[in-house]
Image 1 (cartoon, helix red, strand yellow):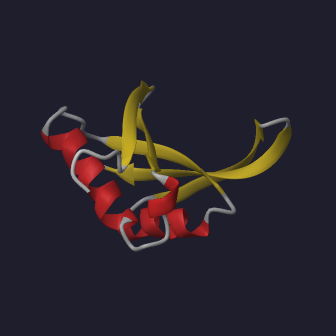
Image 2 (cartoon, helix red, strand yellow):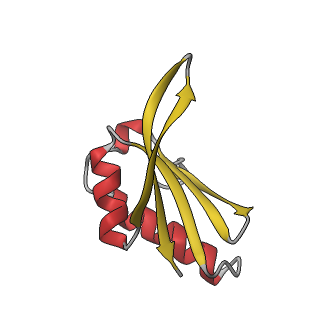
Image 3 (tube, one colour):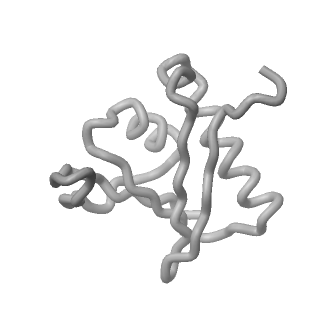
Length: 99
């Protein structure tokens, strides 16, 4: 799979924490690569970009596989809320990893 997009991540400053966003190529989701990919993204952010401290993310509450992956890495649920997305409201979960 050389030279092909596997996924992406981004980090943005958000108050006392960094906001983490991640996405995988849809046809690669559900094949057991999520944990390693998210872990590699976080390691890169820390080792190459100097990210430290609290890291927050938000995930749709129906995305149980992603939530499970984030919890395995150490993220904890900190709140649930409704988010307007695509013309409707959906339940989301905010999660936090303590550096």
